[in-house]
Image (cartoon, rainbow, N blue to C red; front, side, top):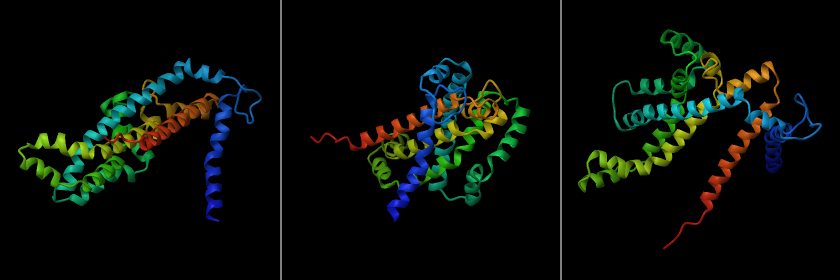
Length: 255
């Protein structure tokens, strides 16, 4: 019974992929399944279209820089929250979690009003700052959990051997915490890359992201190139999953 339910859930999750990928190779002028024919025409249209490539490049740039902004905020905040006691600690935790609690539409309206006064609407820095703040709760939870699991005796041992605070951090603390920080950075990247609501409000034309372009295309044009973009994103995810599985199963050289 459990296996049958698991199979049904898997079919439900996979079935959209089995429709989208064939449609990306379709020769139809609109969405049609099954496709009347197959070609690479829409892939060629995507890779030669400035209207699609520019938002794609913007999404990568914004996601990478917003990830950097998020980690610059989260890492020191996580160390302070986990390792120190101070007044208002519960309020600080609520403040860090607030971007996760507030609906994105409400946040988008707030960003639109504030960034209008700061003249950041329609600019890459504005979208980077907004996405960086929105990704803070997820990265904060991951990094805090990683720091809580860290054995501080390793730091004490390094300091007793003569290492200073900075040397201890870079040679002892950071190598142990690096996997957790990388996970937090990855979640920050994905949160920015997939975000559409705030981008619709504040990105404008020059800083348009790929999710915004996809939303506008499906709403106004029903452009089949959306199937191409979806297929490429699915392929990127599959490559990432397969790569991680291969590296995990790769046997380590034992001297």
